[in-house]
Image (cartoon, rainbow, N blue to C red; front, side, top):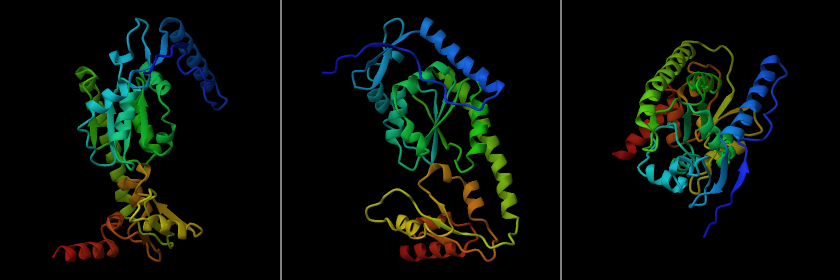
Amino acid sequence: MLRPIRRDVTLLDHDLPSLQTSAAAAEARHNYKSNLAALAAHQPWVATYARDGFLTAYDPAGHWWGDCSLPKRAGLAMLKQLDLRGVVGCFLAPTHAGQIAAALEKIEQHQAILVIQPDDQEMAFSLACCDFSGEIERHRLWFATGANWAQMIAALFEARRGLPTPGQFIRISATSDDLVNQLIPEAEKAFSDVNTARGKMLDGISSTTRTKPSRRIVVAPSHFRLWDDAGAALAGALAADDVIHLDPDDPAQASAHYRGKSVPRGSPGGRTVFYSGDLMDHAPPDSRLRSKARARRAAARR
C-alpha cells in the first residue's frame, strides 16, 4: 500500500533557463522569481503521491489537488472514448498532469497533443508533477499557456510549420463548461488564421517553377515496425547521401505546408525517393508515383 510522502516544496524552484542578456530578459527573470516567492508564501502546497501512485499535492486547505486522489486513473477513465483523428488534438485546460499523461497514453505514437492552459499556476503544477521531457522532445506534446495563449499558438505554428493545426478538441468533465466555451471560439480563430496563412504559402509554392535540381527526398517512418521496417532501412541506407528525410511519424513534419515545401511540384531535374505502400500518398497530387500507387491499389481490390 502506498503511503503519502509529504514535504514542503516550491513550485518549479529551479533557476530560470538562461536567456539572452537584455533588459527584457532581466525583467523576465525578476518576474519569474518574484512570482515563485509569492506563490510559496501565500499559496503553499504539499507534494504527495496520489492513491494511484501519480505525483500530486494537497492544496492549502488540505484537499487533493483538483479534488482528485486518482489523477492518472481518473484521466484514463474520462478519456476512455478518446479516438484522435488526424495528427494533433487540442486539450482544453486539463486540471491535472495525470490527465495529460493519460491522453498521451491513449493516442498513437505518431500523434500529438497541444495543451491550452490559461491558468499559470495550473501549468506550473502540471510541469512539477510529471516529467514530460521525452514527449516534448519527440514532438508529441506542445503547450500554449497563460493569458496570452492565443498569441503563443500563432508563434508556435509560425516557428513549427511542419506541425499540423489540431483537427479536434479534447475536453473532460473536470474542466468547467464555461471555461471550455470561452476557449473554443478563440482557439478556432487562431487555428483558422494559421491555416489561411499556410494555404497562401502553399499556393505560392505550387505556382513557382524551380530552376535548380532538387535534392533527393526520402519519405520514411522512423518508428520501428516488426513486419514492415523498409522505410527505416531506406533512410539508413541513404543517410550518408545528401538527402532530405521526411518522417511521417514525426508530428512536427506532418503538415501539408511542410510536405508541399519539401516535395514541391514542377521541380525539373530533381529526384524524389518515396517509401512504398500507403506513404505514396505523401507525394504531390500531380506525382506519377502517386498515380501509379493508386492504380496498383485499385487493381488489388478488383
